[in-house]
Length: 261
Image (tube, rainbow, N blue to C red; front, side, top):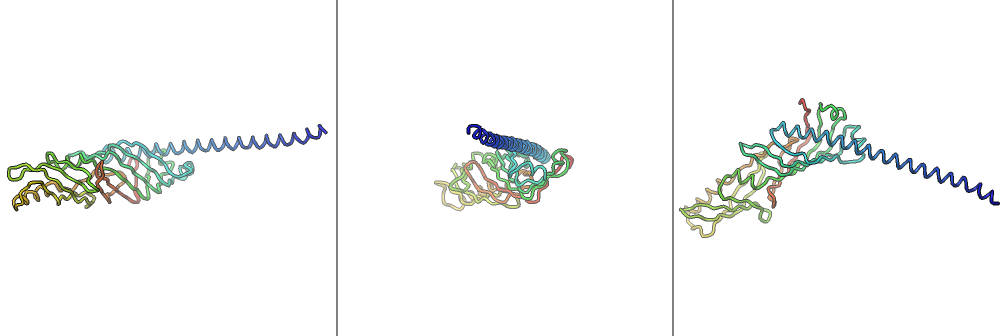
């Protein structure tokens, strides 16, 4: 009887050993695919980050490409096909010369969808990378805006969702502190600030004083010419926030040109 039990036990052990071996092999294959997937994604991210740097330089601007991340899974098949579901990028310290004045966007987040980036193009650095849609968000620092307005003592800040202004003004030989808000809109791809509701405590309610206040409001109302954004992004919306003017920009069918382009 003991021999019979031993005979039955050996096949069972061999079966369990085979199953364990298959599981180990499967885990090794999965691990290898994950590593290959990550290597492929890293290759694409580095190549696209270099394209972004070249495009920013071509536009006579400067920016740090803080991160590039390929979305969707698996990455390996996306790299092989040359088509990516989404690519997210973060640019920091984005600056560009606008009429001799440096305009700063501390951070610009870009989300590109339906990106065609053939493997050979990424390898060689020649050819085009294109995106079906691109969505960007960034912030214009209030410091940059006040430099453009160029009025001593003027201060900008967000106030209950609106753009508020405080500034010293000389009226009839006396100094007053002017306060108010601005309408913030997008006009012809530029950010337009229109100050209309200005007031000053103790300012005489006489036509001459009120005319001086209106004149000052006109002087500080400006259109902000933005530096050229990557990926042909066009500003579609702007709103005041505590850290600056938040800008939203969009583009469609966007080419990211080759090194030789």
